[in-house]
Image 1: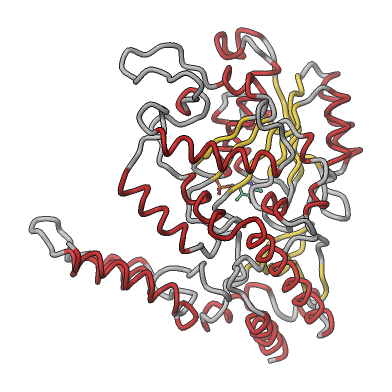
Image 2: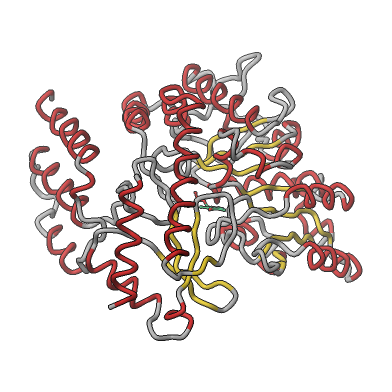
Length: 460
Ligand SMILES: *Cc1c(COP(=O)(O)O)cnc(C)c1O
């Protein structure tokens, strides 16, 4: 077994250390990949060495390498090595985080890191509650269920139809589309999600929100929740959280902050002020598997009021689950999942290894490199189209605006060269480029590389 495990250790070390030499963008279609899988017909046993060889070869060749320092992409992180080790330990011991009684160590490790994060967000660690989720979507789903339970306390038993209410909730055009699915999952329906216009800073338009809530109430609907996004997925902008807090308090609406990406900024004293107001939210989504740099899937759901979470996810008795232990909490009746992987160990180990200061350093470095990227591009005639303290730069060029070259042309050149990765997106009807400094391994030379690549393509 030692020989086999050594293959794993060697691969982890080699890939992690030499990632810079690996092509970022794969260039194979499904046929080629399926071709390589043909020999696996699962009739005869294959030695682990051979399987490892095939799998690592495929993963290296045919993956957009999101852990590469020149991946300026979506919020997919480079991961801390301690978190990779943590993930292996979670697999090894395989503790089931459903009940404390079966996994006391795992549950306490999760509570411990959860309480640290609750405090970072300014929530009361006794009244508040947090748990790990598969990702941001599940955390957002938890938020909508919890908000519904507070607004319509009988709905958990009777269902909304019998209560005769028509719940509706609000988010901006820039918010995350997981809420469309969530609206469907919760049974209130996709039409219950009201999309509010964005203003010229790409933030939720407060007067449009006020008017929509007012109109809905007059039409007999039941507004129950507003989502503010702290770091939208496309443009990284932060909705006006203090204004949203005031509005929700006045209107008695649940205020959820989707900080799946931007929430990590609370760890930096420099960046934390941009999230001011988040401490007054009813609930928060923050993904450890984004800017907190641990492997998927590790989302987190935070709520300021533990009693409503307990009410939302309650089960009643079972005759097969181990009994509750006094003074502890069972995750299966305070969160969405039942059997759950020990995902909190990744954040626990990475936070312990780096400390808050280490995280702050990486987060601030990403933000500074993005400032540098912006200034370099502006100097060369590009134009920024978003404003945010977070490391997301959306930009265009006169040649793009005059339709001499399209963002798709630029991207296809970049992807065929395979040395860096950015994306594009539509903002207010115009397609622009988007680069996010997501990796703590990214250095100034990587930003220079991106700027040179863009300049070479745009001037050719
Ligand atoms: C990524 C993201 C989500 C979804 O999170 P998953 O972890 O992909 O489920 C939700 N909201 C925002 C703002 C995001 O950036």
